[in-house]
Image 1: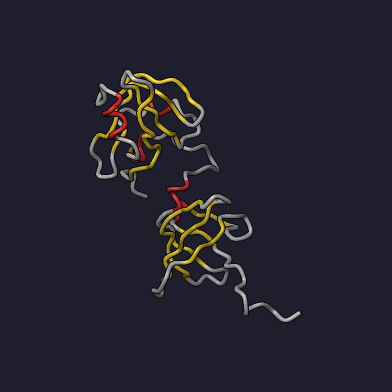
Image 2: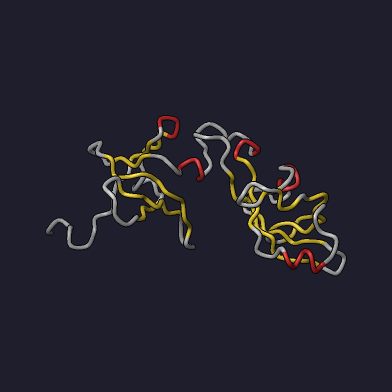
Length: 174
């Protein structure tokens, strides 16, 4: 897998107070890790925010950034999504992975046939879902990222085993 992928780690929530501090919602296990990643990047790879100090807050961090001097500047950045290069993240432990590492994997059926490719990992509030782009074309479909639906992961080999849920109308008769 390419190590130069941008990984979404947070989003600017706006200004905090009147002295130019910024509130950042963190999507990392440890919100304070945002300081260690160095410059946080925009989706195009340019520098978006460089935190120089921070303190934890309920949904992330509040801190100072090199690019922000006033509350108005912080508020103007509200909604900015912040990324880091994949190789800036710590290597996961054995039997662990980042969800982003699933993107691009081939989804194979239990019979070995190729169902498609993982296009993205989404979470609509209940659990993670893999968006699969079918190998034969057509609209994408979603597969719950559960042990039942994805019993085997072979990330290093570029594929995962996908067991599609039985669709309505295709069920076995009782």
